[in-house]
Image 1 (cartoon, rainbow, N blue to C red):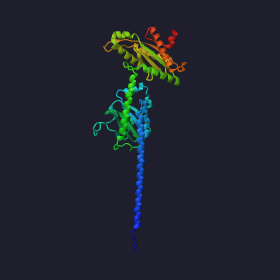
Image 2: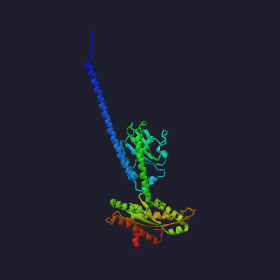
Image 3: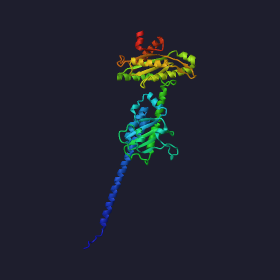
Image 4: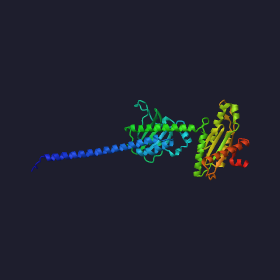
Length: 393
């Protein structure tokens, strides 16, 4: 027996349309909620990056800028790796920053390269200005591991973004994520290029300012520090030595009969002797020590964490390195020179610990100067310590 097919009534069709409309409305509401969530998320990201831009623009020193980038950028961008590669062909940036007291061990994410080719960028043929394009794609250990030496997670994708100033490549901003889909070749790069441009501007400004600071603290002829720097550094080191209970020592060095060198070989020959003396002194020192020219033919050395005996030993090495080898002059001639050195130290448990820092600094230099006077009076080309100078009185 055939079952009768009942016709769809108007009420049934209306119920079906209502159900579909409700489903579509629900989908639209969910889609709208998702879009609003995305807008809020993007707004939050934008605000965080604007705050980041303001923070790095306000950084006054190289360590402050680098520290802010490495501390803040991974957090606000949800990245598993952020490093910087800086182009430093002659190690000028590295050496100047070290002389200004930057401790690079605190920034293992900061890398230095000596040639543009080490950055790995090719000129983009689709860009009218010929500027290199960012490189985005899957992480390749052979290509990228050296750029992320501190990574503690398995990286999935990377973005290597050129740092450009006036179309000149100064380095790269290296970003990494454990998400293999985070950086792909089809991803838009306007945002990360903008971020890299801000970082490049800040880097160039801070490095230029630090270079000017270094020039202001450096003797133009010899390239060592000037008196202004040594005076400031001495106060810092005495304060640090008090807190950490270690010795510091001071050498006062004077080139013997320097006027005779100038009279015989002219000021050009004298300048060459000054430069070479500075080189030979510096070769006997550690990176933590400081060498300064106090003017004329006088140099002062600060030895960190060194007692009087150790300082006298180093001073004797300096004296020998200068006296035992001739100085080559520009005209093809040679000359010999020697130095007299006075040495004084500040013990780790100094009885002067209650005196103001500037008073202690003046006394330390004065003791070394007095010992130098005794070395001169004793015949020159010798080392005399403060304790020996006292005993000779």
